[in-house]
View 1 (tube, rainbow, N blue to C red):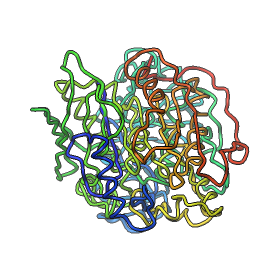
View 2: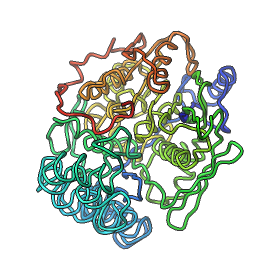
View 3: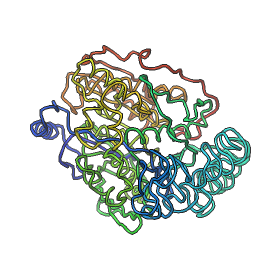
View 4: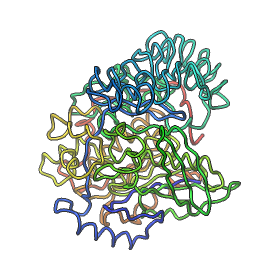
Length: 603
């Protein structure tokens, strides 16, 4: 079964868990157009906000959060103190302990990758004593941490050899470690030595998550949660940032290293565009009754319940693929189970009020609405995993949404590796449209939603995003671009469905698909990333001339059938640039990678 997350372009919450028929959508969109201010045209619905500092790495166990900008902590006596824009995560004791939301130190100060001396739950962390950027604590439980022990990516161990691996403890350990057992993904000598992905301890041995070398299933929301992550480097590049480069300047050479590179691309996206994704709550339980899924969560002493109606499911013994919709959907997906979130009850695009803020308080102050919706998607998947009686096949989950909810759908699929297929519909800027290209279109006098405009519309992006907006020189300092969001969907599948509308920026959106697909190409799975843009139809009204592209992706990645998914079609007339010219925007090449992917959802 698959879960369908659908995001639509409606200012008010118009979803009660029921997918809307096409004519109802058109009527609602028409009403929206009348209510939206004069700059919107027919798809400009509030965008805005600014993205936050660094990603809070969520994990299967509770993990620490990334810090914010310098200053006093939210609640304790530390705060973001001495570390600059990338302070440590939520310091010792969780969201209300000593140190506030950031702690002392830079992007990874004395804590783990995104945490200070304790992460959300303890004192250990992503990188023990070594790692890509050595430190002492981190996001993992207790004192061990989930990151490399005495080593790391380039220290005494980690990705390039030595002793350390991804962890010093196991996924189920409650002290001295994070997610491996006695070795982690690299251990004695790199990715395949004593304790690596196929040896003692790593992701598949005692304490690991699989049953053999690498395995064919994801370890959860983020397989790179145990990777050491250095501070997001400063950027000043009018062209697209290199998606194959680690923060320390080295380029990926092995497919086995994709989870750790993906973790850094996620960090850059959260620091520059989205703001941090909040971690999995301290406790998550779920019940399913009468078609209603109730996910009960606690963060510290705060409790919340997320309820979602699941329709069209199968049975526990014969589950179905499912779509999780952010709002509603016009895509023809009735053959699958479906559920949806009510976006503005999770994180309001107007003021960020909602469940995320209620649970995490000031820890999510830099998070935009899109990453809040992605958090809700992850919690619904948690609930479906806990309730097989819902009849949903959690290995066949899809997400979708259109317009501003299309922006949200891409975030939902990108930031949770349990989503098998992401179907982004007409997301435009904030979807796959490249900020740098949109800015150039705007400078050429084109009517397009770009970085400077979107921050005045709604709080979709994180709070730091506005600092990169305004002109070409500012956007050049953005440490990422939306091709990163497309790329981190790998090794899963993503189909970007666009429309030839000037405000959406079809050439910029196509560029995000082209550049993002190059990561899939390097991993040997190029045909898992597709882009289709066709005009002559209303916004969010799915046309028949894109049906074949959608059907191919559904048949191959959800139904398990043979299908040709080599789709990269752009019919764009609404542009000042004419087309996406790679030489104008890409100054890096596609590397030849050795080895094999650590896991493959379609193996």
